[in-house]
Image (cartoon, rainbow, N blue to C red):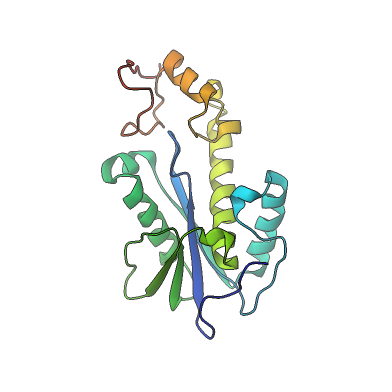
Length: 201
């Protein structure tokens, strides 16, 4: 089972994002504060769980968490400030809305932009080590998946209901054939270098 805390006696918020490597749509992030000594044997890195388990755990997290929030940064903002800064901004936006102020932030990954005066700890593959980061990864992932599934109703050719905007073969083929939609990240390499990109009509 994953660890319940990094430092005992401190209010910790786990933070993670979803959608960094996608070609389209926003990047989502979540911040989650779990009760002290929280236990959940099923809770794990969202990438290791199937969709059914993620949705079950999402409901449990929303019920059990002391505080949580999910935020996003749009594809156009990503193009303006780059995906790394957009990931940090999404986490900051989620933290802004927490109803309880954390004393320590547990960040999935190896880099973070300091949030106010709150201490933070970057943890590589933290979503597979700490319950609060795993909870944040599940909330961010399920929220983003739902957003892309809804968006796919207007752009069915791109397969977003299945690939969620990641660069699959079908997704790239649709970009090649139909062009980039208004929701694609134009700062990303949507097609291999040298191939002409058109806009969705």
